[in-house]
Image (cartoon, rainbow, N blue to C red; front, side, top):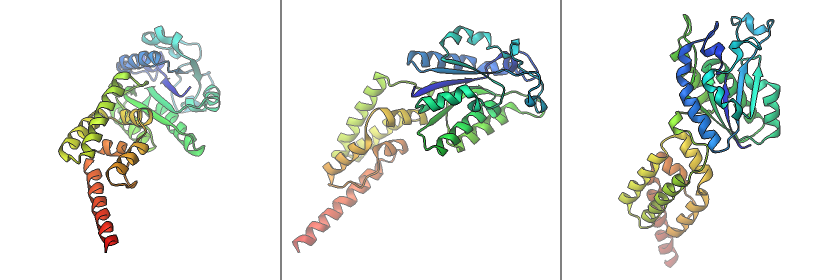
Length: 298
C-alpha cells in the first residue's frame, strides 16, 4: 500500500442537514467521484472517514451537537454510497483529527504509505488537522511522504463568523507551508500511464540531442514543452519519481559534453525552465578545460 486516497467527512451532517451542514459543500462531490474512479482504476486503496459522536462527547463543548453515531447525519451522502463497497476502510471518528484514530494509526504502522491524496470537508478543520498531523508524524519519524490536498475536492461551511472561501484558502495555505502539495482534480494522477511515459521520453530525447549539439534555441523549445507537461507540482513528482533517473542521466550527459559531474539534475532544470543553466555551465567548463590544457602545454 504505497498510495491511498483519503475521503474525509462527506456525510449528511456536513452536507445535507444538521447544525454544521452547508449544502454548498456538495459542489465538490463530482470531483470526489472522479478521483474515486481514478483510484479504483489504478488499484489505489480508498480510506473513508465519518464523524460519529456519542451524546457526551467533549467536542460538543466547542461545536453544536452533530453527527451522532447511528444517525442520518453520520451516514455517507447518497451520491457516494454506490462507491462505499470500494472503500478499503470506513473509519468512524469522534474527533476532528482522523489521523489519531486507532484504525488509521494501525494502517500507518503496518504499511509503507508514501503518497496520500486528501479530499472532503471541512478544509479548515478535519482536513487540515489530518494533513498537518500526518506531515508532522512523517517528519518526526523521518518517513518519505507526499500529501496532496485537492483544492477543488475540499470545502468548508459558511456561517455568520465563518467565511467559507476565506477559511478554505487560509487552510490550504497553512497545509502548503507545512509541506502539503495543493492540486486541482484535473491534475491528479494515481498511476504511470503509457501515454505520459511516451510523451516525456520523446521530449527528453529531443532535449538531450539539442543540448549535445549545443543548440540553445532548440533546447529551450523542447525544455519549454517539457516544462508545460510538468506545469503542476503533482506532475513533477510523478515524473521525477517514476519515469527516469535524472542524476544518472545528467552525469552521463555532462561527461559526454565536458567531462564534468557538477550539474544540477535535469528534473529541476525542466521544472524551472532554466535551460540556460546547463549551457552556462557547459560553456564555463569548456572554457576551463581549454585553459587547463593550455597551462599543461606551457
